[in-house]
Length: 191
Image 1 (cartoon, rainbow, N blue to C red):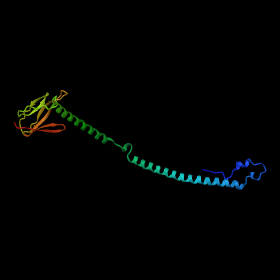
Image 2: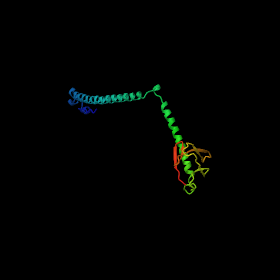
Image 3: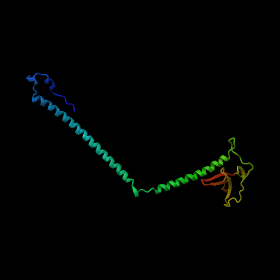
Image 4: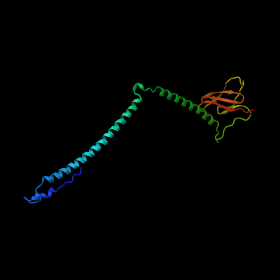
């Protein structure tokens, strides 16, 4: 509110008593009352507009809160929520990753064991026979039975000191090493 005094009443205080200009007339007071009333109406109309804007904002926030609450309610609460499937999926995924890591460790061990100190690969003897690694050395693999369905094993010594037996099969063209992560086929060469 910006009220401006309509008449300089303080100036009248300096006038001598009995001076006609020293008298404050009702008309002069009315001018100031009207000015005050105009300012109050202006402030009131601004307040009404501000209140209307405030009411709209409050309504919008209440509607938003109500919408958010309905979304939260749709998620379910208490006995409606069951995380059993999530736990089962997580357990299965964890086991699959552990199995894959174990298989990868075996492959890494096999590759590391086949690398020489100068970075090359250790070759098996070149005499037409099939060889596999055992105890950090090449051992001949003797396959018999061809397509008989007999499964042979290849003994492998891991860096940990454990020995494992990798199952082998022979179709006459490939040597197949069966690992947890799947089969690895190695081509056979004729002597």
